[in-house]
Image 1 (tube, helix red, strand yellow):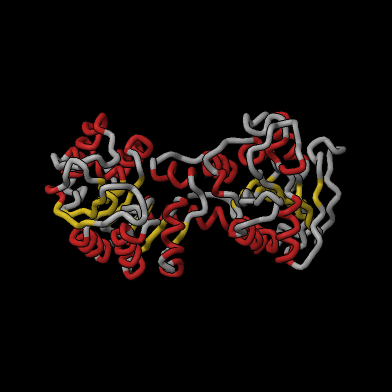
Image 2: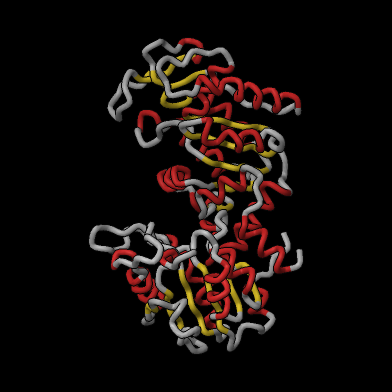
Amino acid sequence: MNVLRFEDLVAQGKVAGQRVFIRADLNVPLDAAHQITEDTRVRASIPCIELALKAGAAVMVTSHLGRPTEGAFRPEDSLAPVAKRIGELMGREIPVVANWVDGGGVVDVKPGQLVMLENCRVNIGEKKNDEALARKMATLCDIFVHDAFGTAHRAEASTYGIAQFAPIACAGPLLAAEIDAITKALANPKRPLVAIVAGSKVSTKLSILQALAKNVDQLIVGGGIANTFMLAAGLPIGKSLAEPSLIGDAKAVIEAMKARGAAVPIPTDVVTAKAFKADAVATVKAAADVAPDDLILDIGPQTAKRLADQLMKAGTIVWNGPVGVFEFDAFAGGTEAIARAIAASSAFSIAGGGDTLAAISKYGIKKDVGYISTGGGAFLEVLEGKTLPAFEILQRRAGG
């Protein structure tokens, strides 16, 4: 994917003395006292900021935070807690600038300085990518750096519009790393390419399943999605979560894979319970023996071993979603087996989605996953085969 990279501009000496506007993803969780409870995104954004400062740029950084109402700023919408945390990590004071779009047409920041521009989603016209707003933002900088993959699927003023009109628009190191990982996993994969798509409903990931069915060698389904596929295969699922109305779609995915000599492995054994609770009695049984009052809450050990063996032989693995209710230890065996196999596999692996990241954290395999995506919705849209707005505009500005 041909996009201009901020790291290349720095290496070419084109950043010193320039006004650099970084769109980061600093949408972190806050508690009732407006204290940050988890700062992964903050830490991930710092390398780009430091790169710009060390290159001698005058640096402005902004992000959205929460779901503010455009034109109605409230104290709880402020990026001040984020600026404070970045300041602690970088050992410097970071001023927070309000009303920066209409504050006289220029932000007061000098080379070597860093300011935080207040919550960009408070600006009227942000979400609708208002052209007038985007042009005002673009006049603030010499270089626009998009470093927020989590927003790459949205065409908003601070993510897309500004990239249209800024003198230079480029990808920051976080976004560039996502582009490289996605290209490696989906555009030029080492085969076999195995995708794991799990979740509660087929309907929310049907387009992803259909897109992957055209490209992958194995499509592993899990969670409620697997239950619908089990129905499509004629297996009983008791009172498990499923979408009977989408059996036809599931069969179509199975047939599309089969026509390519590929497969959707259907569980041969499962772990069931009579109730959805952590202390429910877990029973392993053959998939064909699920009783009418059973809930399927995990794949069984036989199925888990078979899938793990496939993952060990993979060239590339794409992982989105745990295959069982891994939050309950009695029903975590399948997800742990998948996680351990991905960690042990020599395949290039890319993982994304909140539940997936929680599983990676639970089993301590972060260092063994090839790339962990920072975007939820953006990662899913990539799996659907969509071209993300951020990628499209940066490619266009690069002449690619």
